Image (tube, rainbow, N blue to C red; front, side):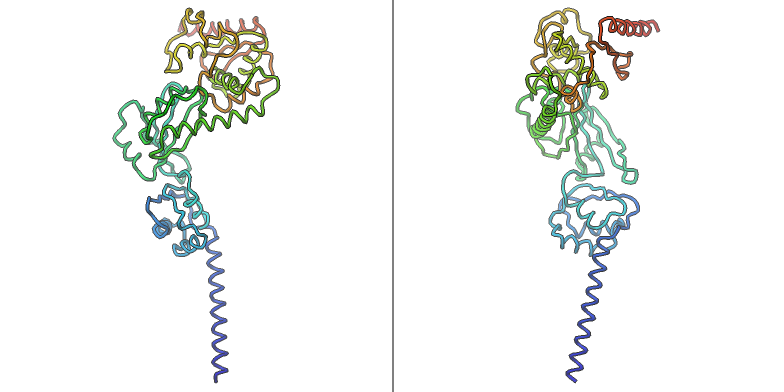
Length: 386
Protein backbone atom coordinates (compact mmCIF):
# COMPACT_ATOMS: atom_id res chain seq x y z
CA UNK A 1 0.00 0.00 0.00
CA UNK A 2 2.74 2.44 1.01
CA UNK A 3 4.49 1.60 -2.21
CA UNK A 4 1.33 2.58 -4.18
CA UNK A 5 0.95 5.81 -2.19
CA UNK A 6 4.58 6.74 -2.81
CA UNK A 7 4.22 5.96 -6.49
CA UNK A 8 1.06 8.06 -6.79
CA UNK A 9 2.71 10.93 -4.94
CA UNK A 10 5.71 10.80 -7.22
CA UNK A 11 3.46 10.81 -10.25
CA UNK A 12 1.56 13.80 -8.84
CA UNK A 13 4.79 15.72 -8.24
CA UNK A 14 6.00 14.97 -11.77
CA UNK A 15 2.70 16.25 -13.16
CA UNK A 16 2.96 19.40 -11.02
CA UNK A 17 6.54 20.00 -12.22
CA UNK A 18 5.49 19.58 -15.83
CA UNK A 19 2.54 21.89 -15.31
CA UNK A 20 4.72 24.53 -13.66
CA UNK A 21 7.26 24.16 -16.44
CA UNK A 22 4.53 24.65 -19.00
CA UNK A 23 3.21 27.71 -17.19
CA UNK A 24 6.69 29.21 -17.04
CA UNK A 25 7.28 28.56 -20.73
CA UNK A 26 3.91 30.13 -21.57
CA UNK A 27 4.57 33.12 -19.29
CA UNK A 28 7.99 33.72 -20.80
CA UNK A 29 6.60 33.48 -24.32
CA UNK A 30 3.69 35.78 -23.46
CA UNK A 31 6.02 38.31 -21.82
CA UNK A 32 8.28 38.43 -24.88
CA UNK A 33 5.56 38.32 -27.55
CA UNK A 34 4.27 41.22 -29.65
CA UNK A 35 1.82 43.29 -27.63
CA UNK A 36 -1.85 43.89 -28.46
CA UNK A 37 -1.57 47.63 -29.22
CA UNK A 38 -2.85 48.44 -32.69
CA UNK A 39 -1.96 52.15 -32.49
CA UNK A 40 0.70 54.02 -30.49
CA UNK A 41 -0.42 55.56 -27.20
CA UNK A 42 0.93 58.24 -24.90
CA UNK A 43 1.41 56.82 -21.42
CA UNK A 44 1.46 59.25 -18.50
CA UNK A 45 3.49 58.13 -15.48
CA UNK A 46 2.70 60.46 -12.60
CA UNK A 47 5.21 61.36 -9.90
CA UNK A 48 4.92 58.96 -6.99
CA UNK A 49 3.32 56.29 -9.15
CA UNK A 50 4.29 52.60 -9.00
CA UNK A 51 4.24 49.52 -11.21
CA UNK A 52 0.83 48.44 -9.91
CA UNK A 53 -0.81 51.65 -11.15
CA UNK A 54 1.16 51.72 -14.37
CA UNK A 55 0.37 48.09 -15.20
CA UNK A 56 -3.35 48.73 -14.57
CA UNK A 57 -3.21 51.78 -16.84
CA UNK A 58 -1.44 49.80 -19.55
CA UNK A 59 -4.00 47.02 -19.26
CA UNK A 60 -6.88 49.51 -19.49
CA UNK A 61 -5.33 51.08 -22.60
CA UNK A 62 -4.91 47.66 -24.22
CA UNK A 63 -1.13 47.83 -24.31
CA UNK A 64 -0.60 44.58 -22.35
CA UNK A 65 -2.69 41.46 -21.80
CA UNK A 66 -1.72 40.81 -18.19
CA UNK A 67 -0.80 43.39 -15.58
CA UNK A 68 0.31 40.65 -13.20
CA UNK A 69 2.70 39.16 -15.75
CA UNK A 70 4.01 42.64 -16.59
CA UNK A 71 4.79 43.36 -12.92
CA UNK A 72 6.39 39.94 -12.38
CA UNK A 73 8.61 40.40 -15.42
CA UNK A 74 9.73 43.87 -14.31
CA UNK A 75 10.38 42.57 -10.80
CA UNK A 76 12.40 39.64 -12.13
CA UNK A 77 14.50 42.11 -14.17
CA UNK A 78 15.02 44.29 -11.04
CA UNK A 79 13.39 47.29 -12.73
CA UNK A 80 10.39 47.99 -10.52
CA UNK A 81 12.37 50.56 -8.52
CA UNK A 82 13.54 52.37 -11.67
CA UNK A 83 10.16 53.76 -12.74
CA UNK A 84 10.47 57.35 -14.04
CA UNK A 85 7.72 59.98 -14.14
CA UNK A 86 6.98 61.44 -17.54
CA UNK A 87 5.05 61.03 -20.78
CA UNK A 88 6.13 58.12 -22.95
CA UNK A 89 5.24 57.07 -26.46
CA UNK A 90 4.42 53.35 -26.50
CA UNK A 91 4.55 52.10 -30.10
CA UNK A 92 2.09 49.66 -31.60
CA UNK A 93 2.88 46.03 -30.88
CA UNK A 94 5.38 46.91 -28.11
CA UNK A 95 6.41 43.90 -26.03
CA UNK A 96 6.34 43.97 -22.24
CA UNK A 97 10.17 44.18 -21.99
CA UNK A 98 10.13 47.08 -24.47
CA UNK A 99 7.50 48.96 -22.46
CA UNK A 100 9.41 48.31 -19.24
CA UNK A 101 12.55 49.74 -20.82
CA UNK A 102 10.68 52.82 -22.08
CA UNK A 103 9.34 53.77 -18.64
CA UNK A 104 12.49 52.97 -16.64
CA UNK A 105 15.42 54.13 -18.76
CA UNK A 106 14.94 57.79 -17.81
CA UNK A 107 15.81 60.78 -19.93
CA UNK A 108 13.40 62.90 -21.92
CA UNK A 109 9.71 62.25 -22.17
CA UNK A 110 8.80 61.11 -25.66
CA UNK A 111 5.22 62.28 -26.14
CA UNK A 112 2.46 64.38 -24.70
CA UNK A 113 2.80 68.14 -24.30
CA UNK A 114 6.03 69.93 -25.13
CA UNK A 115 6.92 73.56 -24.44
CA UNK A 116 9.67 74.92 -26.68
CA UNK A 117 11.40 78.19 -25.81
CA UNK A 118 12.82 79.33 -29.16
CA UNK A 119 15.62 81.91 -29.24
CA UNK A 120 15.90 83.29 -32.76
CA UNK A 121 18.14 85.86 -34.41
CA UNK A 122 15.45 88.53 -34.66
CA UNK A 123 12.84 87.34 -32.17
CA UNK A 124 11.95 84.78 -29.52
CA UNK A 125 8.80 82.79 -28.98
CA UNK A 126 7.25 80.15 -26.78
CA UNK A 127 5.53 77.24 -28.51
CA UNK A 128 3.25 74.71 -26.85
CA UNK A 129 2.89 71.54 -28.90
CA UNK A 130 1.17 68.20 -28.41
CA UNK A 131 2.09 64.91 -30.02
CA UNK A 132 -0.60 62.93 -31.79
CA UNK A 133 0.60 59.36 -31.06
CA UNK A 134 -1.24 57.86 -34.02
CA UNK A 135 0.10 60.39 -36.53
CA UNK A 136 3.52 60.67 -34.89
CA UNK A 137 3.50 64.46 -35.37
CA UNK A 138 3.41 67.46 -33.08
CA UNK A 139 0.56 69.94 -33.46
CA UNK A 140 1.01 73.50 -32.24
CA UNK A 141 -1.66 74.50 -29.73
CA UNK A 142 -0.25 77.80 -28.44
CA UNK A 143 2.37 80.39 -29.40
CA UNK A 144 3.32 83.72 -27.87
CA UNK A 145 6.12 86.24 -27.43
CA UNK A 146 7.82 85.68 -24.05
CA UNK A 147 8.19 89.45 -23.65
CA UNK A 148 4.40 89.75 -23.63
CA UNK A 149 2.01 88.49 -20.92
CA UNK A 150 1.50 84.75 -21.34
CA UNK A 151 -1.96 83.50 -22.35
CA UNK A 152 -3.98 82.20 -19.41
CA UNK A 153 -3.97 78.61 -20.70
CA UNK A 154 -0.17 78.49 -20.78
CA UNK A 155 0.07 77.91 -17.02
CA UNK A 156 -1.97 74.70 -17.25
CA UNK A 157 0.35 73.26 -19.89
CA UNK A 158 3.49 74.42 -18.04
CA UNK A 159 2.40 72.99 -14.69
CA UNK A 160 1.23 69.61 -15.99
CA UNK A 161 3.54 66.90 -14.64
CA UNK A 162 3.81 65.23 -18.03
CA UNK A 163 4.96 68.32 -19.92
CA UNK A 164 8.49 68.31 -21.30
CA UNK A 165 10.55 71.43 -22.00
CA UNK A 166 13.20 72.43 -24.53
CA UNK A 167 15.29 75.51 -25.20
CA UNK A 168 16.09 75.82 -28.92
CA UNK A 169 18.85 78.15 -30.16
CA UNK A 170 18.90 79.27 -33.79
CA UNK A 171 22.23 79.51 -35.62
CA UNK A 172 23.64 83.02 -35.49
CA UNK A 173 22.15 84.23 -32.20
CA UNK A 174 24.42 86.32 -30.02
CA UNK A 175 25.33 85.53 -26.43
CA UNK A 176 23.51 88.65 -25.27
CA UNK A 177 20.34 87.38 -26.91
CA UNK A 178 20.69 83.98 -25.24
CA UNK A 179 21.23 85.45 -21.77
CA UNK A 180 18.34 87.87 -22.22
CA UNK A 181 15.88 85.24 -23.45
CA UNK A 182 16.87 82.61 -20.89
CA UNK A 183 15.87 85.18 -18.29
CA UNK A 184 12.32 84.94 -19.71
CA UNK A 185 12.13 81.14 -19.36
CA UNK A 186 9.98 80.85 -16.26
CA UNK A 187 10.72 77.22 -15.41
CA UNK A 188 14.43 77.97 -14.91
CA UNK A 189 16.00 79.30 -11.72
CA UNK A 190 18.93 81.54 -10.80
CA UNK A 191 21.04 84.05 -12.65
CA UNK A 192 23.81 83.68 -15.21
CA UNK A 193 27.16 84.62 -13.70
CA UNK A 194 28.39 86.57 -16.75
CA UNK A 195 27.67 86.85 -20.43
CA UNK A 196 29.31 83.87 -22.18
CA UNK A 197 32.04 84.57 -24.68
CA UNK A 198 30.63 85.22 -28.14
CA UNK A 199 30.64 82.05 -30.22
CA UNK A 200 30.95 79.72 -27.22
CA UNK A 201 27.31 78.48 -27.27
CA UNK A 202 26.18 75.67 -29.57
CA UNK A 203 22.94 76.44 -31.44
CA UNK A 204 21.03 73.24 -30.73
CA UNK A 205 17.90 72.06 -28.93
CA UNK A 206 18.34 71.34 -25.22
CA UNK A 207 16.01 69.33 -23.01
CA UNK A 208 15.49 71.18 -19.72
CA UNK A 209 13.51 70.50 -16.56
CA UNK A 210 11.68 72.61 -14.01
CA UNK A 211 14.13 74.01 -11.50
CA UNK A 212 17.23 73.73 -13.71
CA UNK A 213 19.45 76.76 -13.26
CA UNK A 214 20.05 79.12 -16.15
CA UNK A 215 23.78 78.80 -15.57
CA UNK A 216 23.59 75.01 -15.93
CA UNK A 217 21.91 75.44 -19.33
CA UNK A 218 24.66 77.86 -20.40
CA UNK A 219 27.27 75.35 -19.22
CA UNK A 220 25.70 72.63 -21.37
CA UNK A 221 25.66 74.93 -24.41
CA UNK A 222 29.33 75.78 -23.94
CA UNK A 223 30.33 72.15 -23.43
CA UNK A 224 28.50 71.18 -26.63
CA UNK A 225 30.24 73.91 -28.64
CA UNK A 226 33.65 72.85 -27.33
CA UNK A 227 33.04 69.31 -28.55
CA UNK A 228 31.86 70.49 -31.99
CA UNK A 229 34.81 72.86 -32.43
CA UNK A 230 37.40 70.33 -31.23
CA UNK A 231 36.09 67.67 -33.61
CA UNK A 232 36.00 70.04 -36.59
CA UNK A 233 39.49 71.40 -35.76
CA UNK A 234 40.96 67.89 -35.64
CA UNK A 235 39.46 67.17 -39.09
CA UNK A 236 40.31 70.52 -40.69
CA UNK A 237 41.70 70.94 -44.17
CA UNK A 238 45.44 71.65 -44.40
CA UNK A 239 46.89 75.11 -44.97
CA UNK A 240 44.10 77.22 -43.54
CA UNK A 241 44.99 80.77 -42.37
CA UNK A 242 43.90 80.24 -38.76
CA UNK A 243 46.36 80.30 -35.88
CA UNK A 244 43.92 78.67 -33.43
CA UNK A 245 40.49 77.05 -33.11
CA UNK A 246 39.25 80.39 -31.77
CA UNK A 247 40.12 82.12 -35.04
CA UNK A 248 38.29 79.38 -36.94
CA UNK A 249 35.28 79.98 -34.69
CA UNK A 250 35.40 83.69 -35.57
CA UNK A 251 35.41 82.83 -39.28
CA UNK A 252 32.53 80.40 -38.73
CA UNK A 253 30.47 83.17 -37.11
CA UNK A 254 31.03 85.41 -40.14
CA UNK A 255 29.99 82.61 -42.50
CA UNK A 256 26.91 82.01 -40.35
CA UNK A 257 25.81 85.63 -40.57
CA UNK A 258 26.46 85.88 -44.31
CA UNK A 259 24.31 82.95 -45.44
CA UNK A 260 21.56 80.73 -44.12
CA UNK A 261 21.98 78.20 -46.92
CA UNK A 262 23.64 74.97 -45.81
CA UNK A 263 24.98 74.28 -49.32
CA UNK A 264 26.44 77.81 -49.59
CA UNK A 265 28.42 77.87 -46.37
CA UNK A 266 31.53 76.12 -47.77
CA UNK A 267 31.54 78.51 -50.76
CA UNK A 268 31.17 81.61 -48.57
CA UNK A 269 33.95 80.28 -46.35
CA UNK A 270 36.15 79.79 -49.41
CA UNK A 271 35.66 83.45 -50.40
CA UNK A 272 36.89 84.72 -47.05
CA UNK A 273 39.76 82.22 -46.86
CA UNK A 274 40.84 83.23 -50.37
CA UNK A 275 40.72 86.90 -49.40
CA UNK A 276 42.87 86.28 -46.32
CA UNK A 277 45.40 84.27 -48.32
CA UNK A 278 45.64 87.05 -50.92
CA UNK A 279 46.03 89.78 -48.31
CA UNK A 280 42.61 91.27 -49.08
CA UNK A 281 40.36 92.70 -46.39
CA UNK A 282 37.32 90.65 -45.51
CA UNK A 283 34.92 93.57 -46.11
CA UNK A 284 31.83 91.96 -44.59
CA UNK A 285 28.84 93.94 -43.29
CA UNK A 286 27.92 91.63 -40.38
CA UNK A 287 31.19 92.40 -38.59
CA UNK A 288 30.58 96.14 -38.95
CA UNK A 289 27.08 95.73 -37.55
CA UNK A 290 28.41 93.76 -34.58
CA UNK A 291 30.88 96.56 -33.89
CA UNK A 292 27.95 98.99 -33.76
CA UNK A 293 25.52 96.94 -31.68
CA UNK A 294 27.90 94.82 -29.62
CA UNK A 295 25.56 91.94 -30.38
CA UNK A 296 22.81 93.58 -28.34
CA UNK A 297 19.77 93.52 -30.57
CA UNK A 298 19.19 94.20 -34.26
CA UNK A 299 20.61 97.33 -35.93
CA UNK A 300 17.30 97.99 -37.66
CA UNK A 301 18.73 100.28 -40.35
CA UNK A 302 21.36 100.38 -43.02
CA UNK A 303 25.04 100.90 -42.29
CA UNK A 304 26.08 104.54 -42.65
CA UNK A 305 29.05 105.51 -44.81
CA UNK A 306 30.66 107.10 -41.77
CA UNK A 307 30.43 103.74 -39.99
CA UNK A 308 32.05 101.94 -42.92
CA UNK A 309 34.98 104.41 -42.82
CA UNK A 310 35.44 104.42 -39.05
CA UNK A 311 38.28 102.24 -37.79
CA UNK A 312 36.99 99.85 -35.12
CA UNK A 313 38.14 96.33 -34.16
CA UNK A 314 35.16 94.91 -36.07
CA UNK A 315 35.21 97.07 -39.20
CA UNK A 316 36.63 94.60 -41.70
CA UNK A 317 36.48 97.26 -44.43
CA UNK A 318 39.31 98.99 -42.57
CA UNK A 319 41.17 96.39 -40.48
CA UNK A 320 43.29 93.54 -41.81
CA UNK A 321 42.28 89.95 -41.16
CA UNK A 322 39.72 88.70 -38.68
CA UNK A 323 37.96 90.72 -35.98
CA UNK A 324 39.06 89.99 -32.38
CA UNK A 325 36.12 87.72 -31.49
CA UNK A 326 33.25 85.86 -33.13
CA UNK A 327 30.23 88.01 -33.97
CA UNK A 328 27.60 85.37 -33.13
CA UNK A 329 27.24 81.75 -32.08
CA UNK A 330 27.78 79.67 -35.23
CA UNK A 331 26.22 76.27 -35.74
CA UNK A 332 27.91 72.99 -36.54
CA UNK A 333 27.63 73.40 -40.34
CA UNK A 334 29.19 76.86 -40.33
CA UNK A 335 32.09 75.61 -38.17
CA UNK A 336 32.64 72.68 -40.49
CA UNK A 337 32.54 75.02 -43.51
CA UNK A 338 35.12 77.36 -41.97
CA UNK A 339 37.46 74.43 -41.37
CA UNK A 340 36.73 72.64 -44.65
CA UNK A 341 35.88 75.38 -47.16
CA UNK A 342 35.06 74.62 -50.76
CA UNK A 343 37.93 74.49 -53.24
CA UNK A 344 37.30 77.62 -55.26
CA UNK A 345 38.98 80.73 -56.61
CA UNK A 346 36.06 82.99 -55.67
CA UNK A 347 36.79 86.24 -53.86
CA UNK A 348 33.45 88.02 -54.36
CA UNK A 349 29.77 87.29 -53.87
CA UNK A 350 26.50 89.19 -53.98
CA UNK A 351 22.86 88.26 -53.40
CA UNK A 352 21.29 86.44 -56.36
CA UNK A 353 17.87 88.09 -55.94
CA UNK A 354 16.09 90.36 -53.46
CA UNK A 355 15.02 87.23 -51.55
CA UNK A 356 17.88 86.09 -49.24
CA UNK A 357 16.63 82.51 -49.53
CA UNK A 358 17.75 82.48 -53.19
CA UNK A 359 21.41 82.55 -52.21
CA UNK A 360 24.34 84.32 -53.82
CA UNK A 361 26.25 84.71 -57.08
CA UNK A 362 29.99 84.09 -56.73
CA UNK A 363 32.79 85.56 -58.80
CA UNK A 364 36.53 85.12 -59.18
CA UNK A 365 37.22 88.46 -60.85
CA UNK A 366 36.15 92.03 -60.20
CA UNK A 367 34.58 92.29 -63.68
CA UNK A 368 32.38 89.25 -63.02
CA UNK A 369 31.45 90.62 -59.63
CA UNK A 370 30.55 94.05 -61.03
CA UNK A 371 28.27 92.38 -63.57
CA UNK A 372 26.55 90.45 -60.78
CA UNK A 373 26.18 93.61 -58.71
CA UNK A 374 24.70 95.46 -61.70
CA UNK A 375 22.12 92.70 -62.13
CA UNK A 376 21.20 92.98 -58.46
CA UNK A 377 20.88 96.80 -58.73
CA UNK A 378 18.47 96.36 -61.65
CA UNK A 379 16.28 94.13 -59.48
CA UNK A 380 16.30 96.81 -56.78
CA UNK A 381 15.32 99.46 -59.31
CA UNK A 382 12.52 97.32 -60.70
CA UNK A 383 11.06 96.83 -57.23
CA UNK A 384 11.31 100.56 -56.47
CA UNK A 385 9.36 101.35 -59.65
CA UNK A 386 6.54 98.90 -58.96
